[in-house]
Image (tube, rainbow, N blue to C red; front, side, top):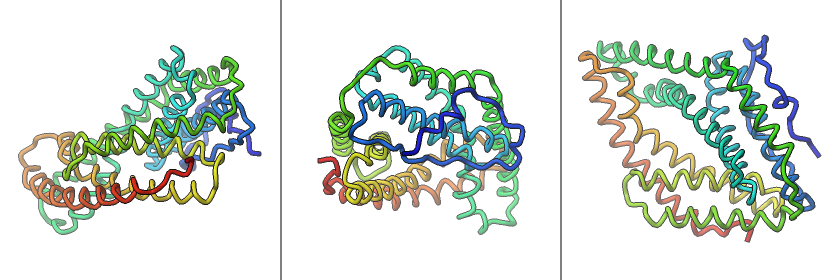
Length: 311
Protein backbone atom coordinates (compact mmCIF):
# COMPACT_ATOMS: atom_id res chain seq x y z
CA UNK A 1 0.00 0.00 0.00
CA UNK A 2 1.33 3.44 -0.95
CA UNK A 3 2.02 5.82 1.92
CA UNK A 4 1.01 9.49 1.86
CA UNK A 5 3.64 11.75 0.33
CA UNK A 6 4.53 13.14 3.73
CA UNK A 7 8.10 14.02 2.75
CA UNK A 8 6.72 17.01 0.88
CA UNK A 9 4.77 18.38 3.81
CA UNK A 10 6.85 17.67 6.90
CA UNK A 11 8.90 20.81 6.33
CA UNK A 12 8.41 23.11 3.37
CA UNK A 13 11.54 24.13 1.51
CA UNK A 14 11.38 26.28 -1.65
CA UNK A 15 12.93 24.39 -4.55
CA UNK A 16 16.01 25.86 -6.22
CA UNK A 17 15.50 23.73 -9.33
CA UNK A 18 12.07 25.09 -10.08
CA UNK A 19 12.68 26.09 -13.73
CA UNK A 20 11.76 22.61 -14.93
CA UNK A 21 9.14 21.89 -12.27
CA UNK A 22 5.79 20.46 -13.30
CA UNK A 23 2.35 20.51 -11.74
CA UNK A 24 1.46 17.80 -9.23
CA UNK A 25 -1.96 16.21 -9.67
CA UNK A 26 -4.14 14.49 -7.08
CA UNK A 27 -3.30 10.91 -6.23
CA UNK A 28 -5.75 8.32 -4.95
CA UNK A 29 -5.80 7.99 -1.18
CA UNK A 30 -5.26 4.32 -0.31
CA UNK A 31 -7.98 3.75 2.26
CA UNK A 32 -9.09 0.31 3.46
CA UNK A 33 -12.12 -0.73 5.52
CA UNK A 34 -9.86 -1.91 8.30
CA UNK A 35 -8.56 1.60 8.89
CA UNK A 36 -9.87 3.66 11.76
CA UNK A 37 -11.33 7.12 11.14
CA UNK A 38 -8.16 8.53 12.66
CA UNK A 39 -5.88 6.63 10.27
CA UNK A 40 -8.03 7.47 7.24
CA UNK A 41 -8.16 11.14 8.19
CA UNK A 42 -4.41 11.35 8.53
CA UNK A 43 -3.74 9.59 5.24
CA UNK A 44 -6.24 11.77 3.38
CA UNK A 45 -5.12 15.11 4.82
CA UNK A 46 -1.44 14.42 4.22
CA UNK A 47 -2.06 13.30 0.65
CA UNK A 48 -4.04 16.47 -0.10
CA UNK A 49 -1.39 18.57 1.58
CA UNK A 50 1.29 16.96 -0.54
CA UNK A 51 -0.52 18.11 -3.67
CA UNK A 52 -0.63 21.67 -2.32
CA UNK A 53 3.03 21.80 -1.36
CA UNK A 54 4.15 19.91 -4.44
CA UNK A 55 2.80 22.61 -6.76
CA UNK A 56 4.82 25.46 -5.27
CA UNK A 57 7.82 24.79 -7.56
CA UNK A 58 5.50 24.65 -10.60
CA UNK A 59 4.13 28.09 -9.72
CA UNK A 60 7.67 29.42 -9.39
CA UNK A 61 8.26 27.98 -12.87
CA UNK A 62 5.17 29.97 -14.01
CA UNK A 63 3.35 26.84 -15.11
CA UNK A 64 -0.39 27.69 -15.30
CA UNK A 65 -1.18 24.08 -14.43
CA UNK A 66 0.58 24.65 -11.11
CA UNK A 67 -1.89 27.39 -10.20
CA UNK A 68 -4.79 25.16 -11.15
CA UNK A 69 -3.50 22.15 -9.25
CA UNK A 70 -2.64 24.04 -6.07
CA UNK A 71 -6.22 25.32 -5.99
CA UNK A 72 -7.53 21.79 -6.55
CA UNK A 73 -5.28 20.62 -3.73
CA UNK A 74 -6.56 23.33 -1.41
CA UNK A 75 -10.19 22.47 -2.21
CA UNK A 76 -9.51 18.77 -1.62
CA UNK A 77 -7.80 19.68 1.64
CA UNK A 78 -10.87 21.70 2.68
CA UNK A 79 -13.03 18.63 2.13
CA UNK A 80 -10.59 16.36 3.95
CA UNK A 81 -10.76 18.65 6.97
CA UNK A 82 -14.57 18.54 6.88
CA UNK A 83 -15.28 14.92 5.99
CA UNK A 84 -14.27 13.05 9.12
CA UNK A 85 -16.83 13.73 11.81
CA UNK A 86 -15.56 14.89 15.17
CA UNK A 87 -12.28 16.25 13.81
CA UNK A 88 -14.07 18.81 11.62
CA UNK A 89 -15.34 20.72 14.65
CA UNK A 90 -12.04 21.21 16.46
CA UNK A 91 -10.85 24.83 16.75
CA UNK A 92 -7.44 24.00 15.28
CA UNK A 93 -8.89 22.52 12.10
CA UNK A 94 -11.44 25.32 11.71
CA UNK A 95 -8.58 27.80 11.85
CA UNK A 96 -6.59 25.84 9.29
CA UNK A 97 -9.67 25.68 7.07
CA UNK A 98 -9.96 29.46 7.10
CA UNK A 99 -6.27 29.81 6.26
CA UNK A 100 -6.67 27.38 3.37
CA UNK A 101 -9.64 29.28 1.95
CA UNK A 102 -7.69 32.54 2.14
CA UNK A 103 -4.84 30.94 0.18
CA UNK A 104 -7.19 29.64 -2.50
CA UNK A 105 -8.67 33.14 -2.88
CA UNK A 106 -5.23 34.63 -3.47
CA UNK A 107 -4.52 32.17 -6.28
CA UNK A 108 -7.98 32.65 -7.81
CA UNK A 109 -7.35 35.75 -9.97
CA UNK A 110 -4.29 34.21 -11.63
CA UNK A 111 -6.24 31.06 -12.45
CA UNK A 112 -9.27 32.98 -13.75
CA UNK A 113 -7.13 35.15 -16.02
CA UNK A 114 -5.19 32.11 -17.25
CA UNK A 115 -8.44 30.43 -18.28
CA UNK A 116 -9.69 33.59 -19.96
CA UNK A 117 -6.44 34.15 -21.86
CA UNK A 118 -5.72 30.56 -22.86
CA UNK A 119 -9.17 28.99 -23.25
CA UNK A 120 -11.99 31.53 -23.47
CA UNK A 121 -10.69 34.52 -25.40
CA UNK A 122 -9.14 32.52 -28.30
CA UNK A 123 -12.63 31.22 -29.16
CA UNK A 124 -13.53 34.72 -30.26
CA UNK A 125 -10.44 36.91 -30.62
CA UNK A 126 -9.24 35.38 -33.90
CA UNK A 127 -12.29 36.87 -35.62
CA UNK A 128 -11.08 40.35 -34.63
CA UNK A 129 -7.34 39.81 -34.91
CA UNK A 130 -6.75 43.14 -36.65
CA UNK A 131 -9.07 45.25 -34.52
CA UNK A 132 -7.33 47.87 -32.39
CA UNK A 133 -9.75 47.39 -29.49
CA UNK A 134 -8.78 43.74 -29.24
CA UNK A 135 -5.11 44.72 -29.43
CA UNK A 136 -5.70 46.99 -26.44
CA UNK A 137 -7.55 44.25 -24.61
CA UNK A 138 -4.67 41.82 -25.10
CA UNK A 139 -2.27 44.37 -23.61
CA UNK A 140 -4.57 45.02 -20.64
CA UNK A 141 -4.97 41.29 -20.11
CA UNK A 142 -1.22 40.74 -20.17
CA UNK A 143 -0.78 43.43 -17.52
CA UNK A 144 -3.58 42.12 -15.26
CA UNK A 145 -2.38 38.55 -15.62
CA UNK A 146 1.16 39.57 -14.72
CA UNK A 147 -0.01 41.33 -11.57
CA UNK A 148 -2.12 38.33 -10.53
CA UNK A 149 0.82 35.99 -11.06
CA UNK A 150 3.07 38.31 -9.04
CA UNK A 151 0.60 37.98 -6.16
CA UNK A 152 0.60 34.18 -6.51
CA UNK A 153 4.39 34.00 -6.53
CA UNK A 154 4.62 36.31 -3.53
CA UNK A 155 2.29 33.99 -1.63
CA UNK A 156 4.43 30.95 -2.39
CA UNK A 157 7.55 32.76 -1.18
CA UNK A 158 5.87 34.09 1.96
CA UNK A 159 7.00 32.14 5.06
CA UNK A 160 3.32 31.91 6.04
CA UNK A 161 2.77 29.45 3.17
CA UNK A 162 5.37 27.05 4.54
CA UNK A 163 4.02 27.55 8.05
CA UNK A 164 0.54 26.60 6.84
CA UNK A 165 1.80 23.33 5.34
CA UNK A 166 3.70 22.44 8.47
CA UNK A 167 0.82 23.35 10.76
CA UNK A 168 -1.62 21.12 8.87
CA UNK A 169 0.87 18.24 8.86
CA UNK A 170 1.47 18.66 12.59
CA UNK A 171 -2.24 18.63 13.40
CA UNK A 172 -2.80 15.57 11.20
CA UNK A 173 -0.10 13.67 13.06
CA UNK A 174 -1.28 14.59 16.56
CA UNK A 175 -4.98 13.76 16.38
CA UNK A 176 -7.10 12.55 19.27
CA UNK A 177 -7.74 8.82 19.06
CA UNK A 178 -10.80 7.60 17.16
CA UNK A 179 -11.03 3.85 16.64
CA UNK A 180 -14.30 3.87 14.64
CA UNK A 181 -13.83 1.97 11.38
CA UNK A 182 -13.83 4.22 8.34
CA UNK A 183 -16.00 1.80 6.36
CA UNK A 184 -18.87 2.38 8.76
CA UNK A 185 -18.39 6.12 8.91
CA UNK A 186 -17.91 6.92 5.20
CA UNK A 187 -21.48 6.16 4.12
CA UNK A 188 -22.86 8.61 6.67
CA UNK A 189 -20.51 11.35 5.47
CA UNK A 190 -21.39 10.77 1.81
CA UNK A 191 -25.11 10.68 2.58
CA UNK A 192 -24.90 14.11 4.19
CA UNK A 193 -23.11 15.60 1.20
CA UNK A 194 -25.52 13.94 -1.23
CA UNK A 195 -28.50 15.36 0.69
CA UNK A 196 -27.01 18.83 0.36
CA UNK A 197 -26.59 18.32 -3.39
CA UNK A 198 -30.22 17.25 -3.77
CA UNK A 199 -31.41 20.24 -1.76
CA UNK A 200 -29.37 22.67 -3.86
CA UNK A 201 -30.57 21.03 -7.06
CA UNK A 202 -34.23 21.68 -6.22
CA UNK A 203 -33.57 25.42 -6.16
CA UNK A 204 -32.00 25.78 -9.60
CA UNK A 205 -33.80 27.33 -12.56
CA UNK A 206 -32.98 27.69 -16.23
CA UNK A 207 -30.27 30.32 -15.83
CA UNK A 208 -26.82 30.29 -14.26
CA UNK A 209 -27.25 32.27 -11.06
CA UNK A 210 -26.24 32.07 -7.40
CA UNK A 211 -28.44 28.99 -6.89
CA UNK A 212 -26.81 27.16 -9.79
CA UNK A 213 -23.41 28.12 -8.45
CA UNK A 214 -24.27 26.70 -5.03
CA UNK A 215 -25.28 23.43 -6.68
CA UNK A 216 -21.93 23.34 -8.47
CA UNK A 217 -20.06 23.89 -5.20
CA UNK A 218 -22.07 21.14 -3.47
CA UNK A 219 -21.31 18.77 -6.35
CA UNK A 220 -17.60 19.54 -6.12
CA UNK A 221 -17.64 18.73 -2.41
CA UNK A 222 -19.40 15.45 -3.13
CA UNK A 223 -16.86 14.64 -5.83
CA UNK A 224 -13.83 15.10 -3.58
CA UNK A 225 -15.35 13.09 -0.73
CA UNK A 226 -16.45 10.37 -3.17
CA UNK A 227 -12.90 10.14 -4.48
CA UNK A 228 -11.54 9.87 -0.93
CA UNK A 229 -13.89 7.04 0.05
CA UNK A 230 -14.18 5.23 -3.30
CA UNK A 231 -11.56 2.55 -2.41
CA UNK A 232 -13.92 1.32 0.33
CA UNK A 233 -16.62 0.30 -2.17
CA UNK A 234 -17.15 -1.53 -5.46
CA UNK A 235 -14.53 -0.10 -7.77
CA UNK A 236 -16.66 -0.48 -10.88
CA UNK A 237 -19.69 1.31 -9.40
CA UNK A 238 -17.58 4.02 -7.80
CA UNK A 239 -15.60 4.66 -10.99
CA UNK A 240 -18.76 4.98 -13.09
CA UNK A 241 -20.40 7.31 -10.59
CA UNK A 242 -17.35 9.56 -10.23
CA UNK A 243 -16.77 9.64 -13.98
CA UNK A 244 -20.36 10.81 -14.54
CA UNK A 245 -20.01 13.37 -11.76
CA UNK A 246 -16.81 14.73 -13.30
CA UNK A 247 -18.50 15.16 -16.69
CA UNK A 248 -21.34 17.04 -15.04
CA UNK A 249 -18.88 19.29 -13.21
CA UNK A 250 -16.97 19.95 -16.43
CA UNK A 251 -20.18 21.13 -18.05
CA UNK A 252 -21.12 23.26 -15.06
CA UNK A 253 -17.60 24.66 -15.01
CA UNK A 254 -17.90 25.77 -18.63
CA UNK A 255 -21.20 27.49 -17.84
CA UNK A 256 -19.59 29.12 -14.80
CA UNK A 257 -16.65 30.36 -16.88
CA UNK A 258 -19.01 31.96 -19.41
CA UNK A 259 -21.06 33.47 -16.58
CA UNK A 260 -17.99 34.98 -14.95
CA UNK A 261 -16.52 36.70 -18.03
CA UNK A 262 -18.21 40.01 -17.22
CA UNK A 263 -16.70 40.26 -13.73
CA UNK A 264 -13.35 39.09 -15.04
CA UNK A 265 -13.18 41.85 -17.67
CA UNK A 266 -13.61 44.46 -14.94
CA UNK A 267 -10.07 43.55 -13.88
CA UNK A 268 -8.81 44.85 -17.22
CA UNK A 269 -9.69 48.46 -16.45
CA UNK A 270 -12.12 50.97 -17.95
CA UNK A 271 -10.02 52.47 -20.76
CA UNK A 272 -12.28 53.71 -23.60
CA UNK A 273 -10.35 51.76 -26.22
CA UNK A 274 -11.45 48.52 -24.57
CA UNK A 275 -15.14 49.28 -25.05
CA UNK A 276 -15.71 47.59 -28.40
CA UNK A 277 -13.85 44.40 -27.45
CA UNK A 278 -15.64 44.18 -24.10
CA UNK A 279 -19.01 44.60 -25.75
CA UNK A 280 -18.35 41.87 -28.31
CA UNK A 281 -17.06 39.49 -25.64
CA UNK A 282 -19.95 40.18 -23.28
CA UNK A 283 -22.55 39.52 -25.96
CA UNK A 284 -20.90 36.38 -27.28
CA UNK A 285 -20.45 34.79 -23.86
CA UNK A 286 -23.99 35.72 -22.77
CA UNK A 287 -25.33 33.55 -25.58
CA UNK A 288 -22.82 30.83 -24.81
CA UNK A 289 -23.73 30.90 -21.12
CA UNK A 290 -27.38 30.24 -21.89
CA UNK A 291 -26.59 27.23 -24.07
CA UNK A 292 -24.02 25.78 -21.67
CA UNK A 293 -26.32 26.21 -18.66
CA UNK A 294 -29.15 24.40 -20.45
CA UNK A 295 -26.79 21.52 -21.24
CA UNK A 296 -25.41 21.36 -17.70
CA UNK A 297 -28.82 21.33 -16.03
CA UNK A 298 -29.98 18.59 -18.39
CA UNK A 299 -26.96 16.54 -17.30
CA UNK A 300 -27.81 17.30 -13.67
CA UNK A 301 -31.26 15.84 -14.12
CA UNK A 302 -29.68 12.69 -15.51
CA UNK A 303 -27.08 12.50 -12.75
CA UNK A 304 -29.58 12.65 -9.91
CA UNK A 305 -31.22 9.49 -11.26
CA UNK A 306 -27.94 7.61 -10.87
CA UNK A 307 -27.82 5.44 -7.76
CA UNK A 308 -24.97 6.42 -5.42
CA UNK A 309 -22.24 3.79 -5.25
CA UNK A 310 -22.15 3.75 -1.44
CA UNK A 311 -25.81 2.70 -1.00
